[in-house]
Image (cartoon, rainbow, N blue to C red):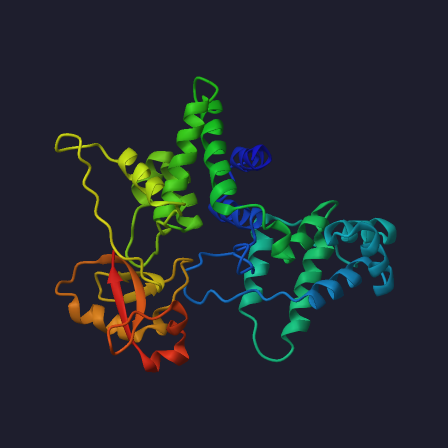
Length: 359
C-alpha cells in the first residue's frame, strides 16, 4: 500500500488531471474479481460496458513482433522464468527494442487506459488482428520495466491480489491527506488518525457510489469534504451491497447480535429475524424520471433478465420520487414452494413465478 500511496502522491504533486488519476486506479487493479475474472476498466454497472476480451494469442503475437523474438525462444524463456511479464522484459533485453522510423509518444496512464477501453468497442471481422496491432502499439512505446507491467495488465489474473476497494482507493485517500498537509501554508505531517479517516471517507464514498471518476472529481474539487457530500446514494448507480456474515452456531449468532445492540426493557434485547431465501440478490433502482434498473450483487445490470420484476415495480410505484430497493429475487412454484437458486436460470423461468422479496 505504501508503493501505491507514493505513486498517487507523485501524481498529485504534478497536478495530474482527473482522467489520469482515474486511469491509474483502474490500471493498478485491472482484475474485476478473482471469481469471474476479466478486466475492470470502467464502473461495473456502466451501460455498454463490454469485456475487453484480450486473447493470449493476441498478446503473444504482439509481444513477438515488438521484441523480434521467435515463438520457440519465447517458449524456452517461459520455461525458465515461469512468468510472462519477466519473459517480456527478458526478450526485450536480449533482442533490443524494435527500431522504428518514428518513436512513439511516451506512455501515460490515460493513454493506456483509453487504448484498453477501445478494445471493448471493436466488433466485426478482423477484430483479433486489430486488437493485436493496438497492443503492439503499447508494447512498442513501453520503456524499461513498463513492458513487464503492460503485459501483466493485459492478463488481469496477474494482478488479482490487488483490490481496487481494499488497496488502491485507500492509498489514494492516504496520498491526498499527506500531500495536502505538506503543501499547506504551514507544512505539517499528516497524523495516522488523519490518514485512517481519509481512507475511511474514500472507502465509504466508493461503497455508496461505485464510480472512480466521480470520486476523483470530488476529491480534486473539494477534498474529503466534497467526497462526503458528492459520493452518496444515487438512484441509477448501484451501491456496494451489505453481505451476510456466516456463523458457526446459533449461540455465536446471538452473541454477535446482543453485543451489537444496546439492551432495553430491563436488559432484554429484542431481535427480529427473517427467512433466508435461496435466490439472487438484487438492487432495484427507480429514478425520478421513472426509469427502473435491476442490478446484481456484483453491480452488473440485469434489468433485461427480469422484465416481470420491472413491471411489478412500475405498478407499485405511486409517486415520482426516486428510490432504491434491496431485495432477493426468488422462484416460487405454483404450490408456493420456494425453489432453488438454479431455477432462476432464464430457460427455467417458464415453470415458476418470479418474486422479489424486500429486505
